[in-house]
Length: 412
Image (cartoon, rainbow, N blue to C red; front, side, top):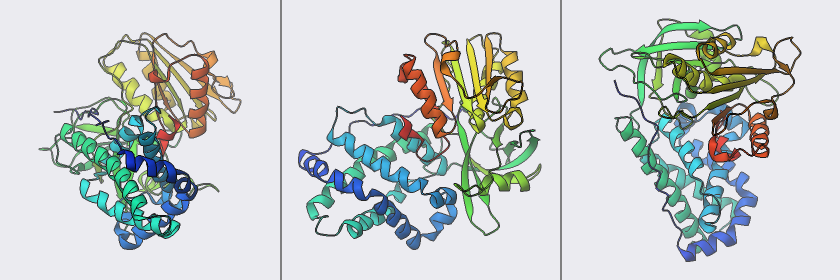
């Protein structure tokens, strides 16, 4: 059985011609000023022309909140800014993160012209033809295709590394176990519906996309971290139900999985992808810092280390509201105890008599020198921890992070 590798080479040679660069520098401010209007109109036009994309590919929850619109706007603006100022850090992490997400959704090169058509129609409609002259349109067209071609080639390399053709990432599976955690999180263990085509192994920290056909007929996709060490032909992912709040709708796919799916049911999942992965050949210390459901990729890493009886120095820190909301708490404790050089530090916002009270503080951790540090949690949590790590003198090149949203790379 093969392991789906996260490695692929990003072509970082994209350069903007001087005459286009001058136009981009001059028009970036006006594009930035209207970017929210442009992207909102783009998605309106795209889904009017292709309603199947909203029902079968794009996350309807992110669309309702505007998260996907902000992610698209920021990615193009970030890439364009780098093209006209090479002294800025290259957005390689952004491109890699987007490429892995695209591969996990089965995105192919033929879909990029569709995005281009409706995006540029929105730019012209919002800014007007007096602003979007032929020269301006040509310059921004060049920016778009430099970014698109970089992603297309990267995604092709990911598909090749997975041993499949472009977009051929979905597999029909059968649920063999359902494990209900006291926190409300549900872990599903699946195996291939066709024994002749078993599921691959994975690199600790990767995720799969899960497809769900909802009661209204829409087929929605969501990504979930793999949480068990690789088993022969089986993968496991953890799902937390999401209740509606004033700031976000209920989790369509997560709630459907948690309430409707049981042992024996079929699920469509993708091959594993993701770039927040453990260097399995390294011997350096590992620090795993998480909050809430951000614990899931850390569990996958811990299980890998435990199964291999790793002697690496491992420091695990997790923050939650209280012990009852702490996902996979018993499993985390069991895995840390199984490692000879591992420690676990816990923080709970609500007084409970367990762990430390309040919010996670990096200064309270005995960070091993030269450790690789992995972070996963909400945006505010990641921003706080990254700032604390920087203040502690930790180089950000050693800090790797994941946020379960379409614009997580914006924290880099």
